[in-house]
Image (tube, rainbow, N blue to C red; front, side):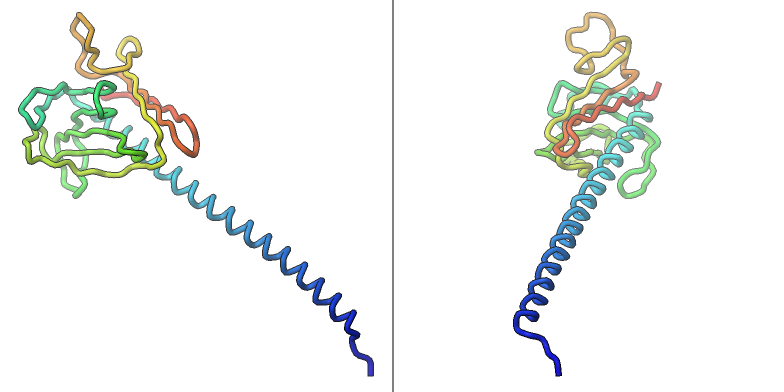
Length: 192
């Protein structure tokens, strides 16, 4: 009867070990690539959702001023000159609880690396008014906005403008500096 010699058995085990290591390496690479792809797809979906919120909000902007929690008048549309990226009133949208709200005060801000959308249940806030905060996208290193009516400017309303300025800009350009994709620039039309 013929059997395997010790040398043949060692060669077979060595070949099996090498093949197993190669298969494990390939499987590990496949799983790591899938995880990276899933995270990138999730972040891209959050970014698309963020731009959709901005587009819908800005397309419904109205020229109505508000009062802050101290009773001071606030312009109907502001941005680029405070800790909020954008702040304005829009109409005809659904609230977070799916309740029709004819007018709603919204703002966008960067909190750490998280871009957030704030919405208040009332237009003229009191000191007890708390916004509903929606985390839109993370991994945002910086944000900026520019505003256009006849020409581009870095803040709205323009503080040093001597003449009367329109209540709403015609367009808003938002720049997000992201960790994964670098600088992303989008331009949105504002409701006329």
